[in-house]
Length: 371
Image (cartoon, rainbow, N blue to C red; front, top):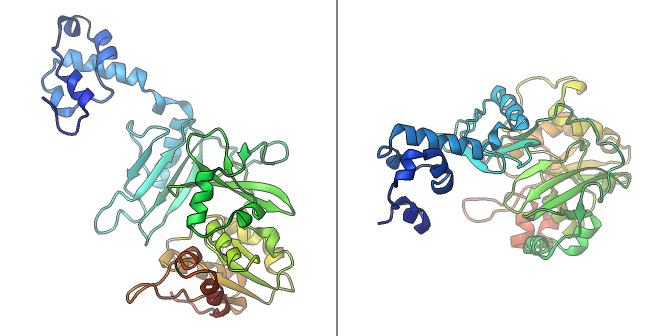
């Protein structure tokens, strides 16, 4: 006998006779025999006292959610519309309903939510193309304070890229030379391969952004709100702004080092309100922090090469509002087939090559809002 959706070993212990010890001392028996999640259909065949004992053992053994930091994160998530129950454990990935887009017409569980295993912070991203809501919350209220001491690769626990991550970038036509020049590293002492994009200003590391191969992102505590690749535009007469670190690396493969990436994701849509005061423009604080670079008198134009999707268009418009539309140009991503276009710089590099990506930049046009 084997139950549906159960492994062989699960079905084997499930079919074990309910011996006298189960009913005489259910707590002891449950802790050694039962799984960490009772099959719903099975509960109907057990005495209530046995079920209560089993659940008590599970709660005591699986108390990850009750850690103080995780409780704090839960409280911080509620005002954002993300409600977490006891099944949402640290160290696991969960598919939830996005409070921003509500899962669209199909009511998808499109919000990928994760609390890291030590409970330090939670991060999330909606993977519906028309939404893209993303963010992170720290359990520590001092998350915006800089770590004591100077940031460097040693304090951040970084190491050179291993073969798996090098192969990941190679598949995207990004060379080891480009990765080395941009100080792309990986986290050490981690079970999974985690890419580390070091953010630098005047040669010093001012923060780090992390990414798994499965495309989950988060920023290190105390990371400065600046553009990625900032030192590459210190003497530039033309600046290219893209939506992701890999797109910045892709443009370097096409011959453009004068490129920076925004440090966070694109907004779901353009704000209908007037621009807030600089000190309250938190979502775009990185623009104001880098104004000295962007407003350099030598800069002739700024080329916006954001993603070719609704959030990417919204990001281009929000950047143009803050940089001045008259200074901005925009790329036109080429057609992929009869009904669609390429989304970003890396897609063009991967499927059309470096020369094609270079032509896209060369053919940039004065900015006009598409919204």
